[in-house]
Image 1 (cartoon, rainbow, N blue to C red):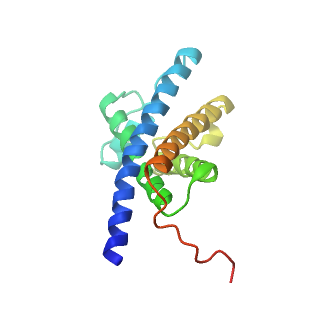
Image 2: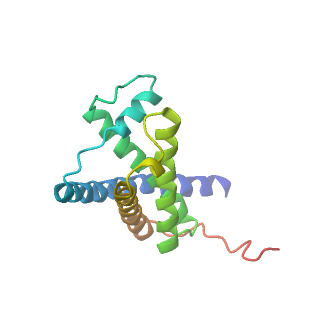
Image 3: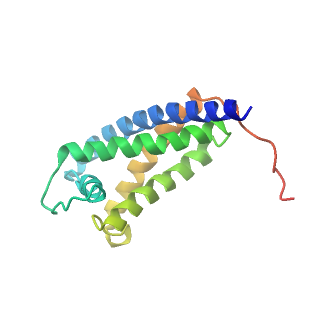
Length: 164
């Protein structure tokens, strides 16, 4: 049975990664609509974060379009894998979508601040903080809806439902 559980988790992670890519597509569409309305330019902090992780030293003036997309879609797939594992183990629905939004925000901010490519969100204008949360919530909602629909909670456990 352990091999079977591992296979189910791996399959859920794979489907979750694809769900995450769907979430990124929805988030990207939302960002483009928001940018058209607010005139906010593209952010290249994701690319600069990834390049820093790869040992490069990108300047603030660089706009590495390709690497921006690698980070954008890669992060979506990686965190989608987590959401897929949540779905198969019974961590699903609106509460899971909300928790996943927090994970997405924390993941981005941890990497951006650990590399020095970004500043803590508390130093951003309030409007930009709100925009970031809304976009990440949209990603997590879309990812979660796809994952919860596509991945059955086959590994949901009823153990530990009390504190003792």
